[in-house]
Length: 321
Length: 257
Image (tube, rainbow over the protein chains, first blue to last red):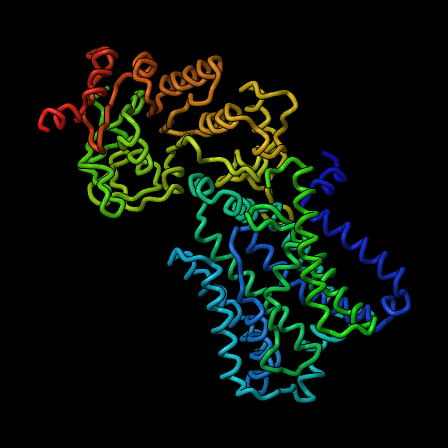
């Protein structure tokens, strides 16, 4: 198979068409509004943030599970980063916040595997529990970074801009490259795909499917945590609702990007393109002056349309989906 | 053959699934260089027994010894590491992965690039392509194709090829000739014989007592989770064994009722 054939048959191809269609449409409708520095800067920043969550979600979906807790983990990590900074300093707070995210993922993964429970229920519990911790911890108050934390080099490296472009996009693309390599060209990746495709067969080949699953939940939470850090480093102000509904947006992004909920098929770059499509719609609707409440309706329509298209493409590629 | 200590020794094995007593006090020995036919009706416990041997189920009570050592933890990984390869009926291949990836699943070869262990695709392709050709799969099937595209017989060929290719000590075949053409069936049986001649232990599970009687050195018959017969093929004819299967366990119940 040539590279082109591989791309066309691959799971992310639908999202690629989607991005092309979206860019064409926005250029035709509202060239000035869409291609403005402000819109593009917002889209790039938020695509990177949602992209992190979508990559984690894609890995979870590839292993035939689901993670509904990423929005709360994202929020909790961000809140921890800002709240712990006065005591631990910026690097210490960052490390502590990411450890909290990792712990959230590990706990949920272990409960799913050891308890033999559906991940949808366990991570729904996580969604509520971690959100509750945010409420209790902040007491509903808004917190901010002091000036010295805002100008700290690590904060600047994560937030702010590099070469005039949002720093987050470099982190996201770097992570995408590493995770794509891990998924497609390492033992862990092969076993992850096998676990998602047919867990019983994977187990019979000696794959420790329970460890694979726990690792995937840990990775997903860690990626959500990274997104939280990047967000707060850019705009260091917490609020209790931070990250709400982002678990659903991340699932939408992964599905638009070609991940099949049946497991074992999907791509990370597709999920990132899915995040780009969702974010693009959000900011273009704002640029067009549409009421912001319209956004969610659009995401819903795009999602359903994308699933139909992706399924047709997969069938054309000869897969039984 | 029986002088040597057994390679696998099962002692008073019991297995419950909830209240269901799937294996009842099963004791059986298997020796290296021997082909054993494991025969019995559906639900007799054949597959359950081999699922213990390949590490999928842990027994409720009783012991399993491999090469003289007691097995403490049951996991397919341990069984495969010990050289116990199992060809199961519906399990063993992931449809979403290529033939090459399936071939090496769980024991993927890696090549270090800048110290990072990455899958050695060249080696994976080379070996699985050789097996594909040996087993006479269609010419347009390549090692990069998803297993999903293969027919039942081709899938079985991949599983058997995989079992033959790696250095194993035990090969367990669960209904290996189901869904196979006559020619493919002959090939599989010939391979089973070759493996035995190479000194491996081959456990061959089937319904077909006549087929396995020609192949195997010994026949073990199971019924209702119990071993009801264990004899060498030169001591009992296929017809006699078939009678044992047909009447095994149930005649007595009927007579009592």
